[in-house]
Length: 82
Image (cartoon, rainbow, N blue to C red; front, top):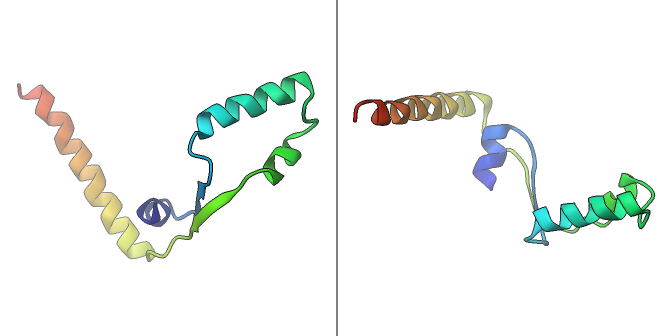
């Protein structure tokens, strides 16, 4: 997750809850039926296991993203050559 934070240049939150998709659906359902009145209350319920801050410099990030895009480009050609 540190690499994701570095590449995105944004903080990445690792929640304590592993089933975040199911939790999100349950929270939206709760909002719909009035269990919670607003989204701000839901934000206070979030429990963070770990917070990753970007640490990679801009030049290194740019270089790694360039290589990533090149790798993706090459992988797309594999199917075309078969």
